[in-house]
Image (cartoon, rainbow over all chains, first blue to last red):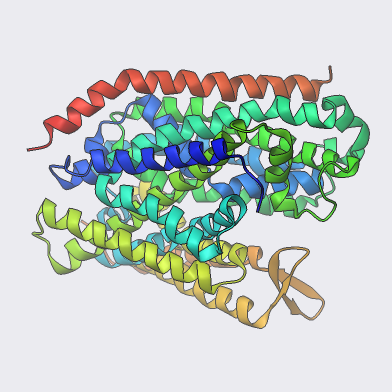
Length: 485
Length: 42
């Protein structure tokens, strides 16, 4: 636990009360499901920027980027963060327009339209699993420990519980508006932190003098294969359910496109500042300002505690909480929508009223939170769990979604079913196999399976499961009898 | 001042000032958004 001043705790408490207040404010302002789930499809460019950025960047990015920058330097930005901007551009100019033309409400809606109900259910299951907030709750456990000295499960219950309350009560309106407050918090405090960090270590030139030259090489010491693996994590953007939800909630395609293009500059700046602050932490470690045994993923917080004065540190910690809350609320809402709109309505009650759907969405939000909590407390290796959850989504829905959007001739139910079904099944089997039969390598922070002289990392499995999904799609196109009407 | 440092200060400007501008534009749209949510409430 880091020592914070009273003013820091007051700032954090005010921030948390504001979030709950927004949820209560919106608790009785929903007339229909579209309003609760998509904010009445009325989001303009500024609110889309704020909600897209704050949702997609959780503390996994904050600590993940900073960890890599602390150990390897600017490659964290060039190799890990930068390729994702290309996927955002693809999404802005190729994907969003097609998605906005239809009256979709969720990602499985797309699968239903092109391939039928069975594919919808598999896609909804993949989306639900991916959206479980296990990693966010784990992050709250860590933050509760760092800020308040709480045991991890207390931090998960209190901090994660606050995000749950305003998501349950306020729906997407509350999520989008709290995202906006969280966006400005997380961006401004990070920008403010830079001069303080430089002041502590003696300026940027000191960093250049003390860090190894490889820290300033754009591809560092990483192999090209590892860079390709890191870069391909950006594929999630193309099937990210919270991203799709924001496209559907936008007022028009132009709003989405403009938000993404402007957002890339802010994303890029955010990633670069995180990279530089982590490198400043490394410099501070060499100078003896921060402890030699600091964990790489805790380096950013540690240098901030040393560098920031009371009050500013409270703002920074509130900004870190914002980063995670804005992620948890959005994923819980998507998971809740999967339960109500993608399972309950089509499978059990096609004539469900909007009030029923809102109620069932709230049940789904609660269910996803509880499952996420169980996973966050039960699993030791959260990174392995995250790789598993992300590859379930990519391997199940990437091929049929892109195939459906861009190749109308391939709208055959068998293609969707085989692609999603084989992708999901192979991902589950292979990941469980590597997580039970492989060994967890601390240095690589991943599960590794040894077959003869071969080493198979858990991250590589997607390069097996994605082609399996693709093969299923092709087989379905060839042998499928008729197009889905 | 090195190229890295210049890039860093540009990023600080985009992140700090850019996010505040976006937030101000959001506040400008907020009354209309709130009106819309009120209109849809029975």
